[in-house]
Image 1 (cartoon, one colour):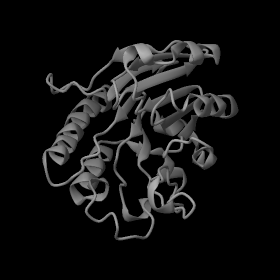
Image 2: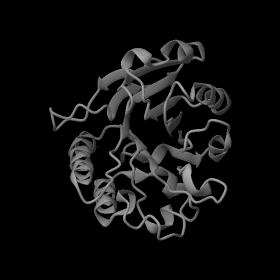
Image 3: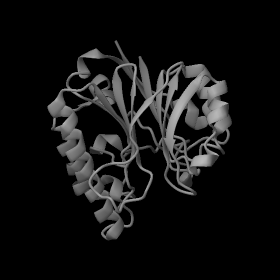
Image 4: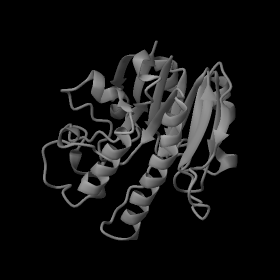
Length: 256
């Protein structure tokens, strides 16, 4: 079972890129973030023609998350992260696919920091930890897949000082990620690739893709009941080099 996460950065604008990658990579499940499309603008018909059923929660202009399943029907279990009824941003969706619960998340960026946006990021992280703890307690097979907007350690960003004030690498952001992992979650990419950068994001500015000036922001965390099934993991870097590409590349795992 191959499960991927991909910040598509506008699903309609990048639809040709997405469909080409789906055909080539043949994932069984995909968590998509940053759809930048309202619910009625989601390209469900084009994806169905490619063999993928979907559940999604859209949002005009910003955010938006979806879960795709190849030759299967994802069973929606949640369309928002619990803990704040006033939060209307489309950043979380959850579905059961072939015996695995897949949570697709798009964590707030948090910039500029300090300030309200960074406070929102940390509060959202706290809500995620509380919800994730229920999966651990119930011993469920879960993948927390998505764009966490955190480079967890210094090895998850190219050598630079230019991001020092950015919310993506602040000590509080990294501590929040570490606190989540300490519940018992396995960072699949880093577990199988302990020494390689495994970047998933290259900003459009300052020639960062040609310079391989990347960050590892997209993660797949496995619950203790699922982690023993992990057999492969990787990042499809070549997708970032395509014409019209997202600034992220898909990260993926294979479960036995």
